[in-house]
Length: 343
Ligand code: GLA
Image (tube, rainbow, N blue to C red; front, side):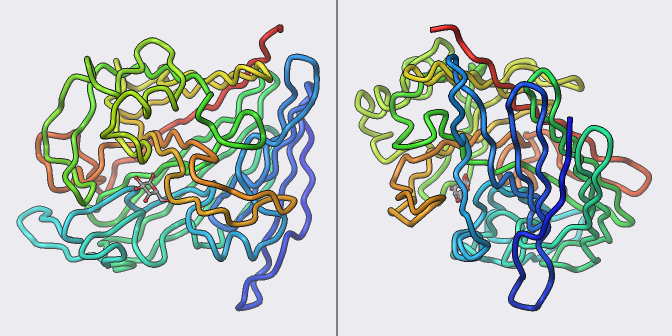
């Protein structure tokens, strides 16, 4: 594995945005930015050896400044906090609201908008940042590290850790947008989700607190199905997926949460996680903005598999807790593994 460092761009305040290019011996090449720990590019060969970029991204920093969360790490608390408030140890904590009355992906200036300290190591790049006490309303100084590694087994592995000096919620995720064809939309991609249950939401995409079976709904991907075929069949999903699934058998070591196959190229991506949930998001808000090489990023032009704790866990005592306390270490691992099918 080789790593090269270069300058990607300059932030409006003059801060340098560094780019790290990781390449393994199998032709997989990944570009990471220290602006939001973004996966800016991930070139993966298909069965015939033809490479394509399988993540949505931009050639220039401007694209990332103009389009939120694209292929970045989200935090301190990914997804939504209802009413931008919650109670912790008997106190009400008010955090910044950036989606109506709710908070989305850590607030106005979430971890996706930070310049992280970055250092290349033997296996990948270590990114670090400090989120100060009170940032976006969250209590405690939070020290966060994300190690992004590219292995010879064609895995992109993200290991997250965090420590705090006051109790605080932590829920980090990778918001990478994938498209295994490298172009067009993802409606023909075949998806398997190892999830028998999901967390239903209200009209503001806030969980109701229920955990329901996927059986008989458009959310049943327990056997592989083309993403678009389910949208057609189930009218309630016609505008796309934005749903949190409960990963079967989630635990301390990574389990398989999802497998996606693109039928024409034969590229397959597996997602492995230690987290209890995975948010499937099908780029429902993409409106034709210009992506890499000027290509239009249209609705359904990518899919995200955001491995994480359930949305709005801070307001649902029945969901696994996201509270980190002093002396504890938050740890989670997300692996995107690529397989080239023989065609
Ligand atoms: C997540 C959310 C979506 C949307 C995107 C942002 O996937 O669940 O509702 O906000 O992030 O691009």
